[in-house]
Image 1 (tube, rainbow, N blue to C red):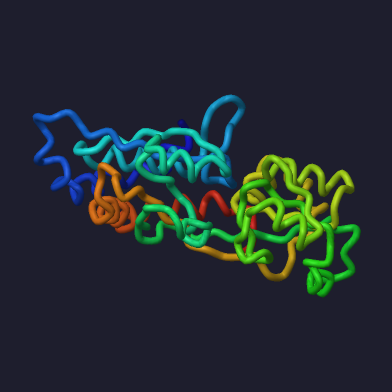
Image 2 (image 1 turned 90 degrees about the vertical axis):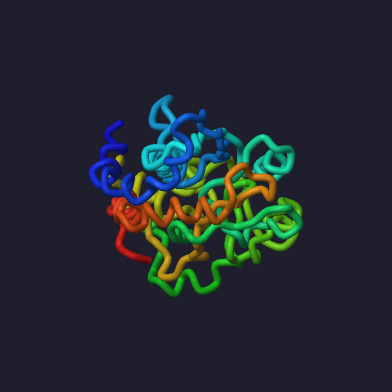
Length: 263
């Protein structure tokens, strides 16, 4: 709940800008828009047993500024999201890169919403200096199964990764960091948002982790929308533009990364 107050301070003005969306829907029930999301960085995670993150906050903000559509989160997984979207289980996957193997899917992409970075991290005690990361692909890399990485050309196929690189494929970013700090693997890859959230909860870990001088990749996060989505991509873009104009998106995304210096 505390996270949502970050958004609503400026949403009264945003709602005025979005009034055109709700004017025709006052006497109608809103159209349900199912939004897929999976555990990833600060996009979607669990705070105890409660779903949290930028995706649920953004969905609540979208619902607050108009009444034509009702956006509803549907949980999926990093590997299942393609099949679930194709099967019509949701209308879009929120906060996703267009480079993550969507070429053979019947989808369209929204305008960019935010930008994220995937960072190389290693045990500080093992790193003589930044040049250690120059030959990073020759090292044992801890990755998340189903995620896409720049070093592999964004090919997430487990067989391809194991055949061409020395990788360990794990369940999530939390496990990547835990395995790294316990001495497994040479280097891990985690999102900047995940690392910032972790350092906020456990500040002492910042002294144990060396962040590589260059990210594995930097990418825009968009909404990947089914061609059959109940909300047209141009209308979704207009709503996102309202939230950008209010400053809410940039402000809240920045706050979720505030414990890291810019990569």
